[in-house]
Length: 492
Image 1 (cartoon, rainbow, N blue to C red):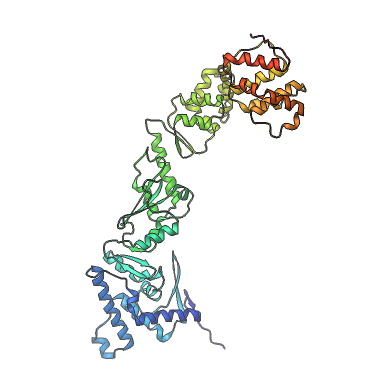
Image 2: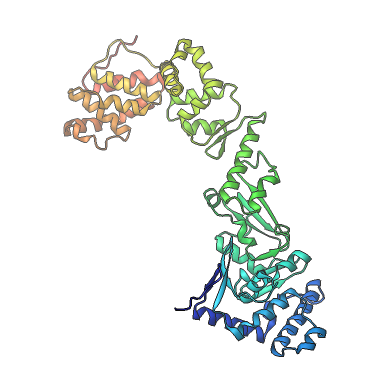
């Protein structure tokens, strides 16, 4: 019967290439145990500690190369440092090879190592046997960091220990900024700001980057730092479009971000939401629309496409509505948002019976219906009205009054829906469309003769559109005469 090999759970058979690489790394450490230790500054606590550790490493190497006899094992000098013990145990891989490797799983990933010796720290073995790796090499020093509160930095070419005081290497700062593709500095810019106190450097993550980022950019600056207090050397702050109004941001909003639990966008949105809630409690009124702080004038200009809508917005803002905060900014959303504080009161004053027509989402429709006649009347009340006009002049007068009321789209629609076959009416229509830059795709409806006459009337029609009340009658009579309808119009 064929003999079956057994393997411990959590281990694997190592590939020949993997064994070869590991043995090569162990040989490097045998020749130079200093590869395991960070660079230190002479005269510091860290330098004293790692000088002692180096002696222990050399002792472990000597005991491997010159195994002590039975008596020497009992009374001779023993290796005491945990790192040196794990180093000595790892050297035995050179004798036995590494046919079987253990697999250690961490949040950062999986790592392979060879178990050696009873009671030898797993983390030390991982750090020693993977000393070439920027992530796993730190495992050999975690207990020193915890015990002595050291700051160790993992560079491409090895470790650096600055003792109890952080001294963040410039090369790591540059590496993090390059990986994040952000510019250094930016104290006056908006965004999430990360400052390294020991370097005196600042980096700003701009709003366009953080608003949708699912990453935690702060962790990039901590990635190659090993410290008992990882945030001691860093400050995280933020400046948003609301920071001029709400300057103070509670530090607890940054707690989960510093722990790496939440993303850039989570932090950014929580800060903005906090500031928006604080704005609502202020006595002054602010208009925060799609993450922009607007003045009342800017708000009216942004949301109003015609004179009727402008009048609605102006009257709503004239009510006691408090601050307005809207992300999805349309006129419809605006009137729904302010219905309870303003819109319903305005409708009640104009025509209280219309309140019963409100269904929870038609506030703009109700307001426009009420304001349509009011605004049109107010905007054209000073212009003369006529007892009877022929068809071409009636269309022209109605259209121009719409334009003076600010409803350009309605004016174009009136022309398009006209079913007249009167050549003069169509010539006047074409002149109006030229003035409104609305001839595209409509030329096929007009003959060459109608278009030609319309072009000759363009300047007079434009003059009528731009005219004050005092000149309106004279200009319209001049147009009437030019199209053969006489120059006398009866005013009511």
